[in-house]
Amino acid sequence: MNKRKFFIDTDTASDDAVALLMALEWEDVDVLGISIVSGNMPIEQGSINARYTVELCKKNTPVYIGADKPLKKKREHADWFHGPDGMGGMNYPAPKHPETEDDFIEVLRGHIDENPNEITLVTLGPLTNIADFIIKYPDSFLLLKNIVIMGGASNTVGNVTPAAEYNIWCDPEAADIVFKSQHPDITMVGWELCRGGANLTEEEMAYVYTFETEKGDFTIDCNKHALDSSKNWLGDPGLGLPDPVAMAVALDKNVIKRESKHNVQIALEGPSRGMTIVDQLHVGENEPNIDEWWSKTERNINVCWEIDNDAWKEALYSTLKS
Ligand SMILES: [Ca+2]
Image (cartoon, rainbow, N blue to C red; front, side, top):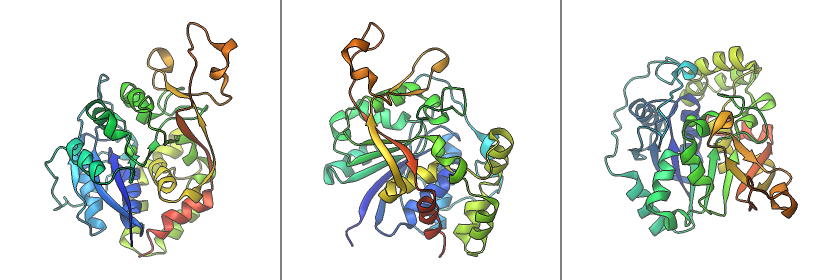
């Protein structure tokens, strides 16, 4: 089988781990490598969690260490949300699978040289690593097939400030570089898409346990802390899994119900810092609306507005049943 090639960038906590598992288990996908960025977890813990997940899937996928802090902002981790180890406090044993010492930027460049326009990049954390790649190899970045970003919020509420979603807020300057990269196929999967009907309900979590597989148990167990956080803090009905939803979009186009291309900019200053400003009505393209604050804009990002919740959950379940 001629498999699709993925490269994944992650700040591995519990929902990242499930997203990694989905890609590693997806039949027609070959994960070339996993790079770790500072975000939900410090990179040391993110690396442990990613390597544990690779081992659980009985793979040898290389795990590379990337940026240990954002471009300008100070570090902001999310252990309060995901548990002290990022994995719901499950204290999984230390993985034997070692880190790979090579510089992921050079490794990814090599993969792109060998497979131009064939590699899908999926980002599950702040965009620091990807900005570093673009700064060094801007032309090479354009030879990725497509980029799927878990991040932002399309004209709706933020989850760390009223305006901003965590991954973008963590490193807005990096997100700005990525969104301005000129790559023609970048899809933004905002955090709001994992809410409401996309949550796993109590019944659906119980259903996953009926698979009686290590991967199924792992998926729900390691997200227990995140479940409590999301219920108590967000008032959501069940378990929201932003990174797995974004991965489902990358793995299976049928998961997307509605998407369209818009100008999306990252707010860099003021109380909206870290916000993804989506020009939903393309008003920024009209001459009368251009002033000293808004220059004429182009559509740079595929915005995913709506997913098929059944299709996303089926994509998840299909990777957990064996
Ligand atoms: Ca993440």
